[in-house]
Structures are given as structure tokens and as C-alpha cells.
Length: 162
Image (tube, rainbow, N blue to C red; front, side, top):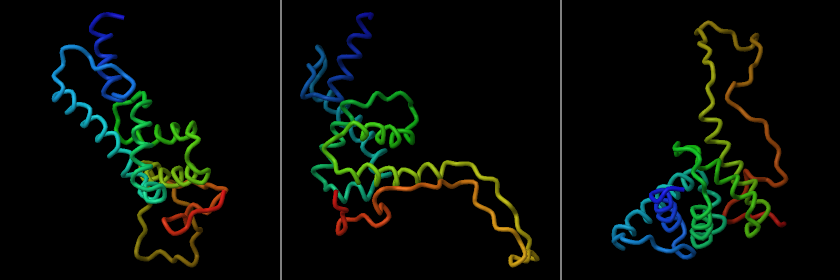
């Protein structure tokens, strides 16, 4: 690895996980703090928007801790921000500190984003269409799923038993 690549690796490792990585040399601490905050907030914002119920269910402190773990290990294989929530789901597969229902709830919430990205052919209906004599169709943008927990009911007031 070239010197500048080693420096970049050290820089990004510190930004992602400053507790376990050394600060790179010759970088002003206040500037480094700006990068650290920007990277963390951008990743967290991309994830948090997709998982509002998950945040409520585990609470603010646990969510922040989970986000710090995710940012520390997230490989950022794609520059597309809307793909980060799916990477968060993969991260959750290796997290043992959350309840089993939490992973399914996260998937359920992510599905909303995934379905909204699906392209569907729009059928234009005329005002003369007789709906009672038409064949029903399933929308192209859909997913048929089954969960072990009632994910559609999970909230701050209802958390399934393990």
C-alpha cells in the first residue's frame, strides 16, 4: 500500500472509530472533529430515516450505540446513500445485543424503502372501466413476506416476548 493510501486508511479508521484507532499525524484536531461528525451524521441520517420504529423501540441511547457500532464497521461499498439502510440490515445479522424481533422489525421497515424504489408499470384506466367485471391485478411493486413476530404492531408500548 502506498504512503498516501496508508494515511487515508488511518484517517478513515479514526473517523469511524476514534476510540480504537490512532489519530493520524499532522491533522488539526478541530478539523478532524468536523470530518468525524459529518461522516457519522450522514450515515446515521441515512439509516435513521428508514427505521423510525426501531429507534423508538430500543430507545435513543441504545440507538446511538448501535449507530456507533455500525459506523465503525460499515465498509461503504457503494456511494449511494439510499443503499446504506440495506447495509445496516446486513450489519444487524451479526449483532447479538438486540432482541430477535428487532431484526425482523428492521427488515419490515426497510421493505417500505425497497418497494418504493421498485419500478412499476402504470396502467391507465378509463372512466368507463367497469371494475365489477375486471380481473384484479397485484401491483408490480410489492413483496409478499412472513415474519415470526407481529412486526406491524411493534411499538414503544408493544414489544413481543422472545
